[in-house]
Amino acid sequence: MAKKLLKLTTLLSVLLLMLMLTGCPPKVVYYQLTVTTEGNGHVDKDPEPEEKGYLKGTTVELTAVADEGWEFEKWVIGEDENTNNPYTITMDSDKSVEAVFKAEEPPVDQFTLTVAKAGVGDGSVTPAVGPHEYDEGEVVTLTAEADENSVFVKWVVDDVEFEDATVIATMTKDILATAHFDLKPGVLPEIIIEWV
Figure 1 (cartoon, rainbow, N blue to C red):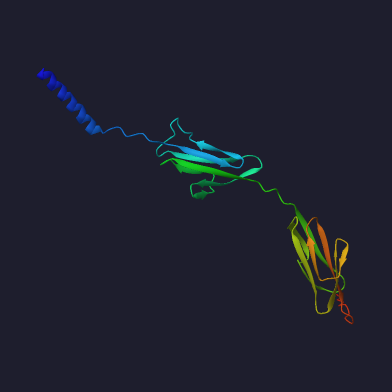
Figure 2: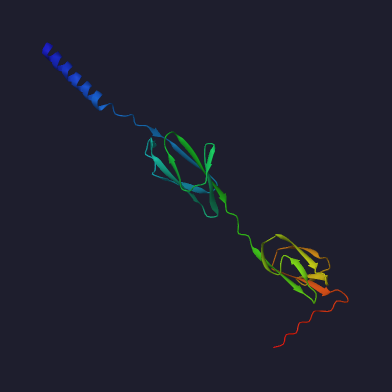
């Protein structure tokens, strides 16, 4: 009996020594990742979680995929926000992430305002002579100022005449705006003759 007890004690001592030398197996820890969305879209996770969640230290790539007519705006992680897509997160605790999607802005139509000058006089106009692109509904102020030998006569904006040197145009279509200038009374036009 004493021999059996000695053998059992020796065996237990050897097992205890082996456990001390190799260490105890580490505790396996899993964390939960909760992903929600605001707006229309979904989130792909790579890798997908195991049944118990994500193993501690796992790096997860989150990719926000917007539905048609929507676009990804940002991630909300607790108090923080991030606009990277995809977004990488390390599972070192339970995490909650929200993907925020917003409706796409409809494209804005653009229209051309073509500014011109006419008449025998001269002056400056704002915007400058030439074509200019504006968004639909944008309000543009047209101004004309005659030079020292000229007088401003009128603006003709799409066949409508305005005697004021300042005219407001709202861009709802392509517009042609022409500033008319005449010479001051008593000022003769400059004639340039070139001999060939």
